[in-house]
Structure formats: structure tokens, C-alpha cells
Amino acid sequence: MANLWIAARRPLAVAFGIGCAVSLAASGRVTARLALPATLYWSFVPLLEIAGLAAVLRRRMRADLIDQFFAGHGPWLLWLAAFAALWSFVPAPVAFGHSAYPQFWYVMGALAAAWSAWIDFAFFQRAGKRSRAEAARDVLLQRLVCWPLVVAIFVAPAGWQVMASRLGL
Image 1 (tube, rainbow, N blue to C red):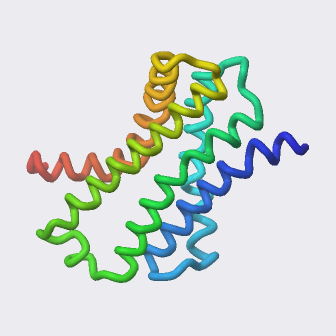
Image 2: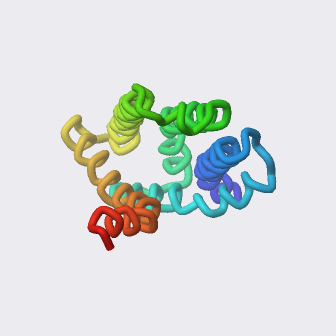
């Protein structure tokens, strides 16, 4: 039972962080009524991250390694909290209007991605006892397993509408 808690605590924290960010962006505050369902809905993100980790670690997958891997999600959660706070306190036309705000958030997102990749690179070197090249390959493989699925689940529902609109359908 202790191993299950070790394996689940940080993935649950990531899902809860996403749920809180959704609540903050949607209502300007964190409420259980919004944060808990959003946590449940967004739990697919940590589950896909674990699937990517399992693809890399294969038979070496252990509860403590899942826990250590999810410690590297800090940059994403920090970026997400800042982004949710922006949407919480600034009207949408101002927050994402025709100013420099979109570029700022894209750059900050890219920095969060790079920082997270660096943390994961160090994780795979240390935990997987990998060379620099092998650790880089592991980061890439983990991202290739989970990120396309996350993007497809998140973007596909609205993406079809955007494409149909641009095609005049």
C-alpha cells in the first residue's frame, strides 16, 4: 500500500494543480466545485505521462521512480498557475488581445518546456544510469509517447471546429 501512495502522490498533485488552475482561470478563485471535477477530467495528463515513463523505463519501473519523475513538473505547474492568474485577474481581450501578451506566454511556455526537459534529462541520467545521449533519447521517447496524445485529447475537439471554420464549412 505504501508503494501505491508513493507512486500516486505526485501525479495526483499534478492533476490537482491543473484542476486548481482551471478553477482559477474560470472563476477567479479556486473552489472545490470547479477544481475537483477539473482534477478528475485532467487526470489523463499524469496517466499519459506515466505511460511515457513506462515506455522508457520498461521493467525498471518502480513507485519511487514515478514519484521522482513527477517532481520535475514544477516548471509546468508554475507556468500554468501564472497563466491561470492572468485569466483570473485580467479581462480576456486585454490578456490575449493584439498586444505582446500571446508571444510572452508562448516564450514562457517554451522556457517551461526547456526547463522541464532539462530536469527530466537529469532524472534519466541519474535514475536510469544513462549516458547523456541515452538520457536525451529517453526524454524524447517519453515526450513522443505522451505529448501527441495529450494534444490530441485537448486540441482535437476544438481543432475540428477551427479547421471547418477556416475551410468555410
